[in-house]
Image 1 (cartoon, rainbow, N blue to C red):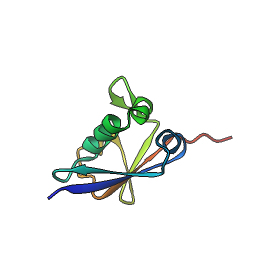
Image 2: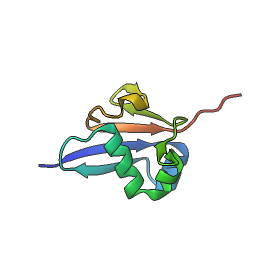
Image 3: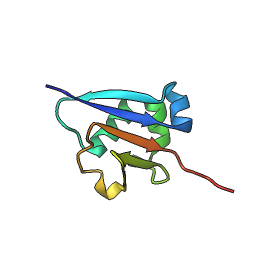
Image 4: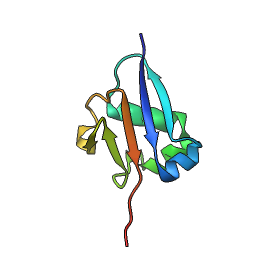
Length: 91
């Protein structure tokens, strides 16, 4: 039985895909890293933005459940949803 992970997209990422949520199916519960890699594979226009030189661009933030996770935690299970937040600028 597969596992569905919902990915919420905001701002420029939402504009690139044309919707604010996408769902990706996995054979087993994926890690956050696996979800991000599948986003890059399925939505190359997003992948070109959130990855720089094959590494996740740290200016973007990832929420897993209700928790902000850093790249050191990308090996953890993703759960049923993640959100990818763009850099925030202020002024």
